[in-house]
Image (tube, rainbow, N blue to C red; front, top):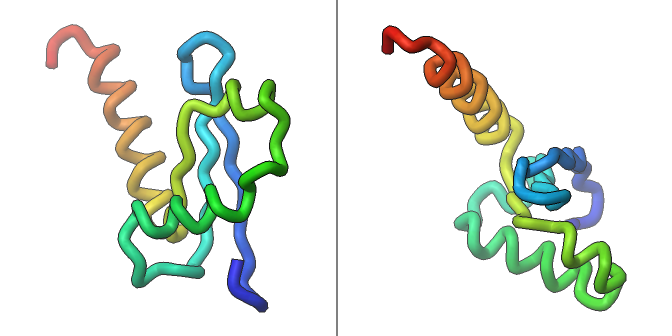
Length: 87
């Protein structure tokens, strides 16, 4: 993370076995494409997780707070839509 930048770490169950989705929410790197953001995180954690920890991570995301809000609110909308048999 660039010096002086903050982040929130959001970990959620993926629904696939016991794997998790790791989301880093930050304004840092907002001008980079998602793949470049993720590459920076992967470089930073390389060799710092145990093989068991690595195995439990389905995917990483690096999002701005606005992107995170869009992702999470879209997920809730999708869940509610899928539960309504009339739609």
